[in-house]
Length: 476
Image 1 (cartoon, helix red, strand yellow):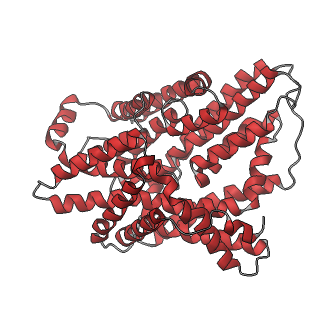
Image 2 (tube, one colour; image 1 turned 135 degrees about the vertical axis):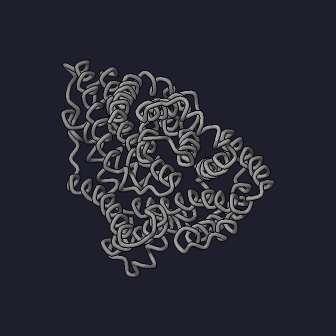
Image 3 (cartoon, helix red, strand yellow; image 1 turned 30 degrees about the vertical axis):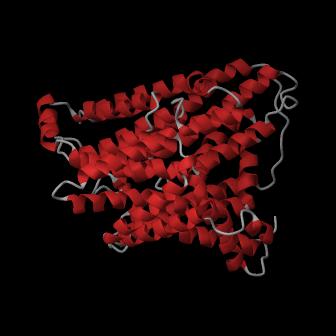
């Protein structure tokens, strides 16, 4: 694809909603990076106008959350500390939409790179002995760069590669391969919640826990990620026995595919390490730094791609790509932004309105061990996710609540890891959660089949092992 073709895709006048989200982004940068707290109050009306403009496209759950936020804002306005409370709530309200906007620019840069498509084809074309691990890692790193879009991209490649002809005319072989490849991608995608600084889950949890740094929880999250991926591989090995006697799929050659995958992983690692180094060198939080680092990194990546494509004006072409494939598509993220922003708002306001002293006394009287509390948190997130309550809402409220009280022996990092673990376990099995609904629609299968039948045993086993681990960790 030429540079001109890339910049023309999605080109045209920038939508009004995009300009509104750009204003929200700039206010979030001023608030989080420059310390101008009033900028949060300035940015909130722009976000409200953005949501009003997209109201007809919002899902019912998003509308309910928005109405709830409005009611709580009116209650909060009657408090003596209303200005301080609403300023803090507005800060959280605009941060997550700004983060979504920054990630959209990263997706735009990645989508222009030929590396992305080559890496996806290489992963899907792996032989059965390596395919599960390859697709698990692919679902993980594509998800980090593209969020739910990476999941959709790989699932689409699976459907194109897994034909009846490739299965030797046996429909049962094609269906079994589809199941194994899809669950590998979904399990890798679900583990993003445990550690990735570019993921909404970890960002939300750390932002809801003042004083906690990403480096405090990342090692534990990475360890659990490795464990969950290993468990998924064991499940696949056990289930692969049903494929005995099936003819191997026709090999697909993807030149330089391995190096393409290495580059995708390299981008994730590089951006994470840059953020960590800058966080250590400054007094700024990792979450605040991402608002600046992600757009800058996206522009550098896009420029590098245009130079490789021999564009005559690489910087101009790169900016065109980011505008056409990034900024101009901001209105399409209305549902994500509505849920993320309201969850952040609720995490601040509900914590301020709750009877903190009574909760503190109840926890002290219950005398639960830290392990029991952590195991309970993971289980609550998982259980509510099964009945359709988005983990974003649950985790935002629980993280903010426990950050506001003193639970003897319970560390903030332990709370965050427990919530993230429950989140990771339920993503691949909650029938009403957006990622599973999207995958089911792509496959033309019920979400209960893709969730409970394909991933149920893995998800419940993962939760059981994590709960056991949290109970043991709490005894130390």
